[in-house]
Image (cartoon, rainbow, N blue to C red; front, side, top):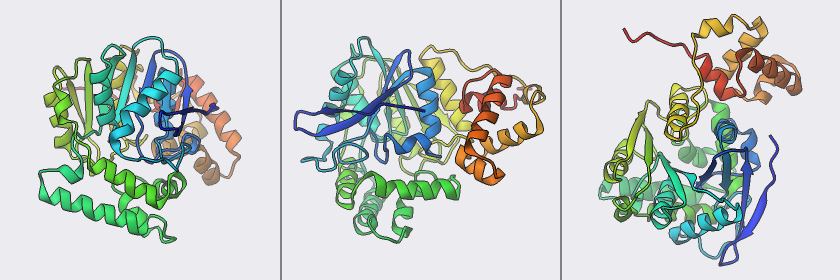
Length: 355
């Protein structure tokens, strides 16, 4: 997947890196932490998100100030600038019609505030794994204490050569991930920001509070939340949905704050987003009917796909070139009548009778 990374300067002269992939209805993702516009394209954690969203929408994303490919030396990393930064990217992208706004994790707070400020610009508001109040402002003493402890771990161990400190932090994002996915997340920590910035960015999240904005949202809203999310507890998602007028709520059976490609919750997320935005849902057929069309090698590739393996990991395991893996997948997609990994997984998911 090729992309062109562009830069736009904010009012306080911070250069934000942003990109647009795909065509069609515009969808803007409010910035979240632990992203890198270039590195994420091959990520075993983020690549399927990028693939799905860019195949269905004109997908616009950016690295937040202080991280990724945006300026690390930003004068202010507090949450006061989050909406301004989103406005800057939206203007740079020259979006001429109302767009879908996606807010994940702390990005949900940014998306909520933007939707309240610019209701005419937002056609659909999608919030996943969000929270209205940060850990430092929680009314739950245990949650406040947990957040302070986590902040100390980040401050003391982020730049350490020992990954144990970082893994205490990252394992909460994808507790259901493979070791390869956890290793990638640990590496992303050091690639995406500095120790000092990590501490400041975590503090900004801990101090957010958008509860007063919820009742002011006047755009169609879909709230999705993993049932056992360790970063943002389920009650946070329910609180958001219960206080935004007319919001739809979808509970997903997952432990992961970042949904992984192989889990059914990811397929449910995709289907819910397509339905909510009026896009065509991927047709599902009995799994065996489609898999009968595949060769033994292609069925093996499909099995590895369900395990969440990347092309590079599959190539290494099978002892073949990564280009050969891509060619095999092209044939597999053609036989299934799909265009991507996500569609292949959804199409071959077993369909169970409701009786």
